[in-house]
Image (cartoon, rainbow, N blue to C red):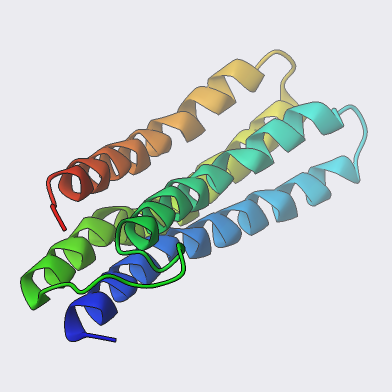
Length: 156
């Protein structure tokens, strides 16, 4: 394995780290959902929607990681020879979603947990609670777009 390939694989691994933020965020929201479900009047469906929202960062990171690994041939049976510059470029492509995915997944989990508290106390507030959590999602989407554009600009 060349240094270029190793750098590109590292970029894919960093992109996949967005799943860490999703796991933590879904866990934070899940704890809140479990707490409010112990009471009466809170629907499972409304808490489930909010609890699932932080999971998207992991999906975005996985998509970029798979794209990087496919481009370098790791998933196809044999890696192609990459220069150090190409490897660094692919490493750089994984950074935006990897870094932002971790932080936004955690932040979205906190926003979703607050939303779960809201819907447990006031009927008809699910839409507003979702909007607050989705505002955090905007930054994960922007990071995904940056990673995608960087990836598409790299020729191997």
